[in-house]
Length: 97
Image (cartoon, rainbow, N blue to C red; front, top):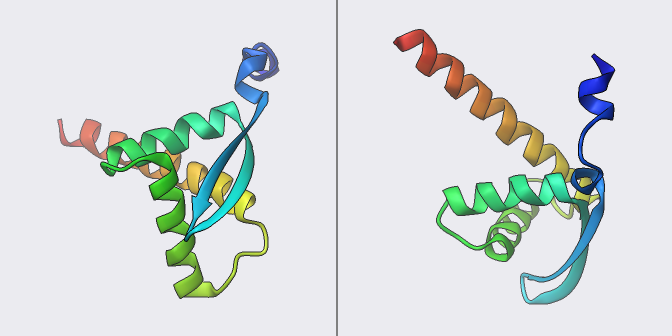
């Protein structure tokens, strides 16, 4: 089983830094490429650019909970949540067939 994880392309877990504006403030975010791919997909599915999606997410978190302690961790967990929701949606669609 570990071969599935160990054998993945190292480019997936290589980190990349992107400079973006969050609510008018210039910042940089460093994430693994696999997470950037998921965030790009989420943004695209919502009809917005990745920087706009990230800025909107940050604004919504500020409203709900205040300043996040670790925003990059929040982004990673958002990716996991998206994958969970996608899996549930796929299972529901298969069950309906």
